[in-house]
Image (cartoon, rainbow, N blue to C red; front, side, top):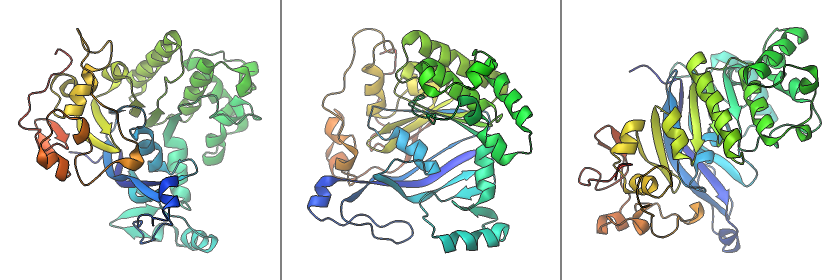
Length: 375
């Protein structure tokens, strides 16, 4: 099988928990051997996933399950109070460690070494690696959860849309503006100078998301990162944005990482689906198998509890999902809500196993006959 276009391996993320801070509990140890201060707790422990050229991987799960952390943490794009403490991200022939925090001297030394630094013939790109920044700057597009807040408030959207091209290419200002205007037209927005110079407060939420998609397209990306791109949009606008994404995927052949809690949207766009619960990918399989032949009880419960996906009466999952800071990783993360749980589920964390076409974390995956969307 060919190497993935994009791959995340062993991603670890920690956040600050005030309760642990009050108890003065020391935090976890990073991959670099640094002991974090009291209050820090690991909420993602060694998450791995990948996407190939032209493929769409849907990442689904309940709110608060860790989906967006898995996506944005791979690029070091986390808010304050959260940090990557381990793992590596690979894109094409480059690797990046989002957990590394470099001093000025470290940055300068790394710049001087440049491409001489190699690990297993892969450039060990880190925060100071200009080659990595250029690769991501021109080859990866982003759609964020809040399309309004994602824009800088005091700079026009046209200028912001062309920033990556201005930074990483030799295109002239006129060429960049033309490409931005063409991209605005491609997402059914006006190819006008007025819109080019508009500020974020002048856009509706739907227009802001379309403009964000246009900004991604100016770079002609091979990979689109879509983090809950339909959140907060009314059904009509969300449907229009979804149609645009589907059309662009068909015409451009982009690979995509599509994070959402909307299983109906994932069914339309994804080739494979990763199901997330408690900060872990509990099942990953081709989209048809996820919907019709789920192997993890949580996947089956998720399918059965969402209106519009499963015909007939809903099959709700009993109980509530734990906060990520409270997940017990010494046992199955879903054990407290699983009707199929046995003693081993409550005392031992399941490893990753293969059941049919799925990779799944469940002690009983090969034994269970779970209902899909057809009941």
